[in-house]
Amino acid sequence: MKDKLKQIFEKTLSSKGHYLLGLSGGSDSMGLFYALLYQKISFEVCTVDHQSRSAIALEVEALTKLCQKHGVVFHLKRVVGISPGESNLEDRYREKRYALFQEVYSHGNFDGLLLGHHADDQVETILKRFFEGASIRTWGGIAPVSARGTMKVIRPFIETSKEEIRDWLKTWGASWFEDETNQDERYLRARMRGELIPLLREKFGKEITKNILNFGLKMRLLGDHFAQTGGEKIEGPIGCFYPLQRAISRLEAEFFLRDICDEQGLCASREELERMSLAIESKELGIEIRRPSKRLILDHHGIYLERESKVDYSFERGETGEVGWQGVVKGKVVFFAPEGGFELKKPSLLTQRLPWGVTLKKWYTLHKVPAFLRERIPVIFNEGKLVGECLTGINREDGHVKWVLTFK
Image (cartoon, rainbow, N blue to C red; front, side, top):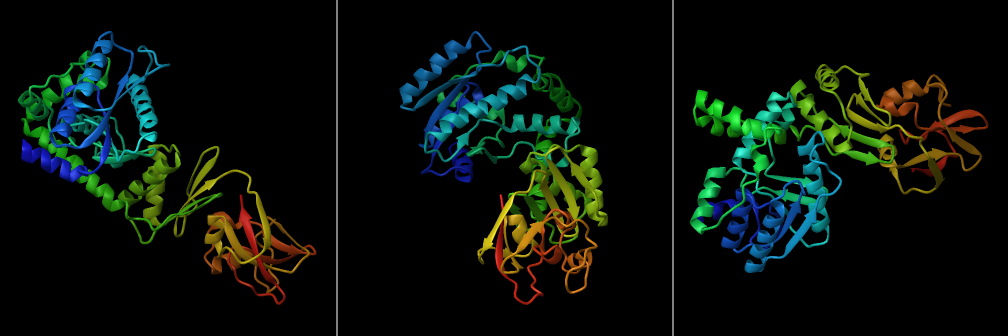
């Protein structure tokens, strides 16, 4: 046990760190509580009272005394505004718990939030996501380390079985509370725990758990590999550009797109993502996913997330900005225009000709300007005539000087 715990904590925690432990009183979080004491790792406790069970008051009292006994700082938070009869109860309680943990976390100098999820939880999660038809990206299950808001969330026991944790607690002479909702078949996880997983073990043998965990690990490794698909993101007030540095497969494209949607809070259907993934693989352009305030657009060199709000901007003489369309995306771009007497406005037609005889469309194509910016970004007029543009940073006119266009 001592060697196993040392190995677990050396892999996930710093001996000099200070952590916040989410303590429910169940065997998983209690095992983590005693293991942290055993390994002499500094931590505080936060217990969330869901106010959904009559026994919780006695449990909170016992946890308070336990922390006092061992000199551990104890924080108590209570859930309000959720009725036990509501739909999606598990999800609502989970979101509220994280919000309450965040309150405590943000007022302390913590190196991470510790949660007691274990290997049995991981098996349930992987199976649940698989049978629900979730994306491959989620088949890796619960991440051992993740971020939630400003919190670094760490699950040291994610590869340790519940049975082993309980054996450790018995060795330490420690007890835990049994939450009756864990057997409440109104909850999907309770039904999986009580019916589905025992059936799978009966039919396929106990090794089924190990095989599912191994499958989840491979999916996480695959996801980490595919996360390297894109280059460095370019971001600014009007949107984000995610470059693709090489040709990628449909499967890689799906991982890439789902990561973008998760990051940007864009809810896309499986069919939409599959369609765009296929387009990326086959190098088909003109595919987009549109929502009221956002648009995901497939371009030659990557994916653009456009925020479909009014584009406000100002300009002044100067050189503090980037040249070319990347500067536009970042929010500040250098362009060339007459000393005075010009105006900026969106092009009415891309067939309008620049002073050197080429149309805007051909000029932009020649210099590989993304199509999604061509009609949205203003061009330069002087005395009613088109005299320049802001997307290439090229100056072909005598007497034009540098200006800086700033987007808001």
